[in-house]
Figure 1 (cartoon, protein in one colour):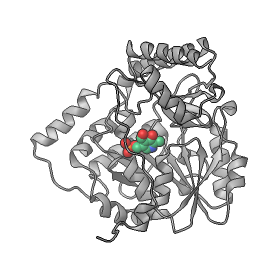
Figure 2: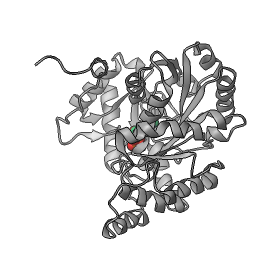
Figure 3: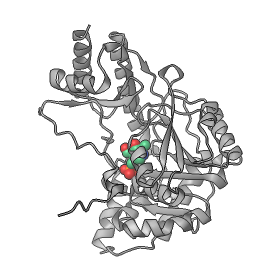
Figure 4: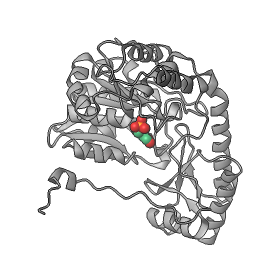
Length: 376
Ligand SMILES: Cc1ncc(COP(=O)(O)O)c(C=O)c1O
């Protein structure tokens, strides 16, 4: 048979999921939260199933859920939105992202992102026909960008700038003045700001999460993406949302409908319960992640391996550029020789994760220390 795969599909590279060779591998790179999902969210989903609520909903999501999201945004983010016209419920942040990019990009349009970045974003921009322009950030500056560097990357083709703060994979949280600088560039160069806030609840030390849409002049050009995945440990339930000005939401509906019709209804019932409640339940969970963060930093300090102090999300950017190994080789050898699963971050840094509990965390960190010493 002739090659029926489209040029579009052939242009996308995807690495196969790595199969874990040894059962004793300790995963120090997981992107999946490991806390217990709050019971009240589970109960809401179970109740909806028992009540046989199993049909399509409105394309943009159940009205009760859009109201709950608007309430959450007002309460937690100081952002007032119209639940009827400015909210679109999606099957996770991933679908939100694809829907946003398919709606915004014409062939050849450029999108700016700071690097290291969540690699899936580049694939999504490519699928949508655009090209990704990366603005490097460094460990020395805590992986926080200089808005002037973003400005310098803008061309006549630039359509949007993507901000992921708190950041996967660097653990950076962009301070308010940096976000204001990005908004200034977006206003002067007429760009859309796509703000992925899925790690908003993970902030440490004195870091504060600011929703970009709340900054002066940002609202009319900001698309905010969020989901249940990280904040509620519900990665497999597939529930996210987009908040944007009404004309953009309207333009997104055909793509959203074309891909999913509507987000999964059971997930939507869980999300109503999740977004209507306050987040006091998360306080001890965040304290436990802070403890793990300190364990990471102490272990790295003990073997003099530099890192960017993680201030947000649940990742640690570990600088192994002095190890004599490139990142993929480091990750492969750490797996084969030390039984460790580590991630490739970027800019000479691995992506470590706080999503490993004691005592496996400590055991994994000891393995890491032994492996690093063996390279010296
Ligand atoms: C920055 C970022 N955005 C989006 C996603 C995908 O989120 P969701 O599960 O809501 O599709 C991830 C998942 O790891 C992520 O790290």
